Amino acid sequence: MTQFETVEHDVLVIGAGGAGLRAAIEASAQGVSVGLVCKSLLGKAHTVMAEGGMAAALANVDERDSWKTHFADTMRGGYYINNWRMAQLHAQQAPDRVRELEAWGAVFDRTQNGKIMQRNFGGHAHPRLAHVGDRTGLEMIRTLQDHGIHQGIDVHMECTVSSLIKDGPRAVGAFGYTRELGKFKLFKAKAIVMATGGIGRAYKITSNSWEYTGDGQALAYHAGADLIDMEFVQFHPTGMVWPPSVRGILVTEGVRGEGGILKNSSGKRFMFDDIPDNYRSSTADTPEEGWKYVAKTDANARRPPELLTRDHVARCILKEVKEGRGSPHGGAFLDIAWIKEKISKSEAHIKKKLPSMYHQFKELAGIDITKEPMEVGPTTHYVMGGIRVNGESQMSTVPGLFAAGECAAGLHGANRLGGNSLSDLIVFGKLAGEHAAKFAKENSSIHIDNELVDQACQEALAPLDSPAGSQANNAYEIQYELQDLMQDNVGIIRNEDDILKAVDGVEKLKKRATTVHAPGNRQYNPGWHTALDLKNLLLVSEAVARSAVVRKESRGAHTRDDFPEKDDNFSHVNTVLRKQDDGNMQVVQEEIPPIPDELQQIIEDNK
Image (cartoon, rainbow, N blue to C red; front, side, top):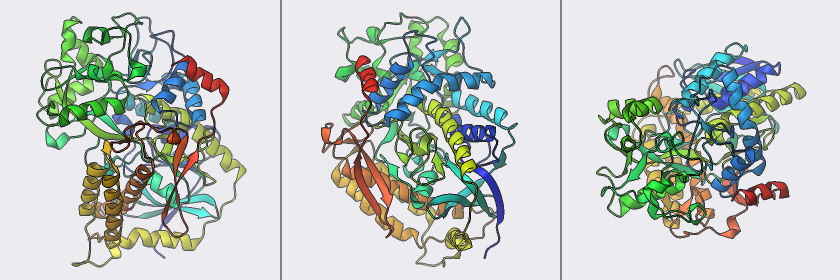
């Protein structure tokens, strides 16, 4: 048997972003030993790229806000296929989690009377996003790390988990390797929390960093956990489109929250051309009436159409491009410089509110956003689907395996509202850590079969051991082909023929991936890492495509031009994916439990 190091913890948290850190902190606070595994260096989590803010009904800027309104907005944004219990808990607990971060040292922007400042964001009825300029995710990670470092948490940096290990139906361990030297590690644990993030690297154009290869979703699926709603992939309307080297990098919704407007190549503010009926006002739709700047206007002023839900704004930009009114490089123009007409000293104001965006465009595109518009277009950003969890405990359908953050599903339904992701991390990270610790205390004995560990070793070594030569495949080539396949066929606008082409294409790539060869040894070998990540990327790509086939309607982030309308037959169902005994993927649709009358009334009252 290949040599490996054995490490034992009561609770193992895989992923060190906002959800993973918050879970580790909470589990440690419950008095159990905690291990934290991160694929990159601690502090390099993808959470730092979340810029605009975290949604919580603090009511600091608009006193009409409440958890009930936040709940109703989240359900409406998710087209009512959300896990309603998760949406309720999120809306109720987010304010306390934000205040907790403040108590731990987070430095938020402030209102004139010293309260946490909140800004507008798409789909939210009131200014709700607590923020730190446009660096909110970075401040969250800094705060959680500074607080968590004193909790006695063991951190395993630059370590990738390649397999989960079970004892009967229960998850009891994880097998992985150090990315630098390729040394194997076996983690024994009484409970495991997955907090690995999303799947964005399955697409060619994405705001996601290299770590986002669907590890948590794939690991949980292969361990027997259900995945749900993987067809719902969110394309953020505003990513950079030029120059090519930075295509897809996120342009925060905070730009539009601070007053940025979208224009086509003719200079027309096109978002007024397509406002959904449930957002339409009885007043005339002029740019002046649409404008709302939180610090300057009456609280009853209309919010701009640029802050409609992300799926809608992305489709509107795509329509302008397809009809020949796009920007020179296939996007639209996002203009924040125009606020000089409204605000004195606008240049200093923009630099204060959007420092990262100013620096990003100045350094990467040679554009001064205080003087000229940005060129933006849709970019793969977030997956609403993922590991199916219990709404209160965050435990998956595999005992002892929990999930939180983007790799868990349910809260966001068919489309996530901006800002709900950061508050999602701290609300459900806490709950996952709390219940994982409780599970570990109640289920203390574990047994790991050496044959399963040996099998995990062999699977990890397979790309190194496979023969080179003309029959061998290159992991990078397969990954690039997969990204093109998904981008072209399961993107923003879908149809049956394209989706089936993706399903067939993924099957062919899976066969080629069985003969992937990674030259060299285990030390400093990115080709080997890519080969192991490829297994996860292929799994989540298949999950997205197969889920998209069966949902024959358009809803939220899933838009089909062959079924352009919502269908009541799909209004109350989740798409569920399970691994069958023969290794094939089963796709079924299951009814969502009915929402309680009191919560349904809240939705009705806030329409």
